[in-house]
Length: 151
Image (cartoon, rainbow, N blue to C red; front, side, top):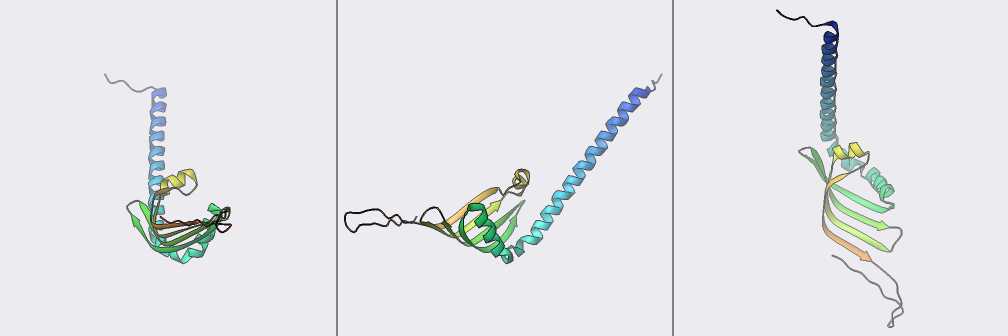
């Protein structure tokens, strides 16, 4: 003889089916949203050099120093965008120092950035970094000395 489910068992099965159905819908909506963000990013990334002035203002506000960024080519590798900078010049307001990077490649991590609600870099590579640091201190020879170094 086959046993018929009791009303309480039917209610439990219906609840389980409802939870599974809702879970499938949430996962589907999340996947569609991620795909839409990636597609939008791939389409808008080549337009980034047009917003160079806004990028300089935003970067200066973030680091609290004078900054000048010259953008090069921007591409998308796999799941991550890659920004190439043709030049980066930093001048902190608190010290008499300047940093010049001739070329750099930045790879932001969009997933961790979304989770932390701030820009998170996955990879930063720089070429030909020059740092000039001047200090004026008393010297027995001329009353002051200047130190400049680059690496």
